[in-house]
Image (cartoon, rainbow, N blue to C red; front, side, top):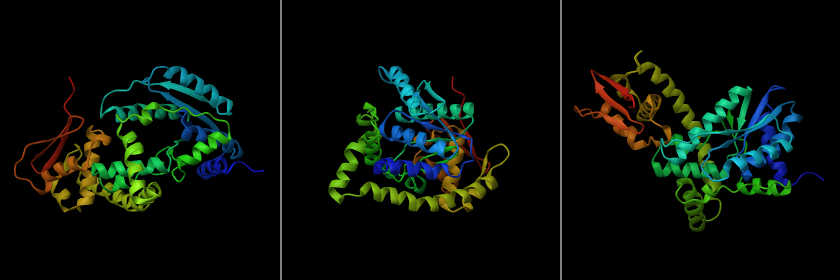
Length: 326
C-alpha cells in the first residue's frame, strides 16, 4: 500500500522542486511548527535523500509569545527525528518598522538569509499554500498595490522556493495526521489584530458563502495569470531604470515621462524601496503621489513616504533621500 494521498501530494510537490538541483547540495526548510511547514519538513526529509541531496531545517523564534523558546527547542528535536540536519533555532529581535506583521517578516527573512549563507544552502523551502496565495491577492486588491501584488507570491524568489502553492491547507493538515505529526497552532494566526488573520477568518469565509466554494482556488489562479504579465513589465522596468538613473542615483524626469505608466511606476517604486521605504508599507497611492512630480509638476514640495524617505524634484531630476535617523 502506498502513502496516504495527502502525504503523496506533499512529497510530489517537493520532488518537483528538488529535481533540478545538483546532487550533494543542501536545502533548508523554514519550519514554524505549523501544519504547512511541518508537512513540508516531513516531505523534504523523505525526498531529499532519494534525490542525493542534504536537507536541514531552520526555525525562527520571534520571542513574541510566552514559551516561544521552549517550543523552538522542542521543534528542533522533532525535526531531527525526521532525519533532517543541520537543524537550528534562531532567535530574533522584532522591531516596529512597517507594523508588527512586516517587522516580524523582515526579522524572519533576515535570519533565514543568514542561515542560508552560513550553511551554504542552495534553497530555502517555505510552506506557503494555495490559501496563503489567495490571501496575498486579496490584500493586494485591498491596498490597490497593482499587478505585481495580484500576481501573488512567485514559486521561486532568489533562493526561496514555495513547493506548496498549488496545495490547500487541508492537504498539509491531512499529511500531518497521516504521519502522526502534531502541528503547533500559532495564536497569532487567529488574532484579529493582524490583517492577514482577519482576511483568513473573516473575509474569505464571507466570499465563499456569497460566491460559492472555490474562491481561494480562483484567486490563486488569478495570481498565476497575472504573473507572466508582471514579469514582462518588470523586465521592461529593469531596462528603463538603468536608462533614467544617473550615477548619483537621481532619476531623469524627462526619461520617466516618456515611459508607459505601468513601467514608470515600477521604476519609482523600486527606487523608493532602494532608498529605504519598506516594501510592505509602500502602497499604490504613495507611488502615484511621487508620479505627480513627473507628470503633474507645478512646483509642489517634496513627497514623504513610509520609512522616512523624501522625494523632491530639482533641476529636471527626482532626488530620493532618507535623512539620517537621530
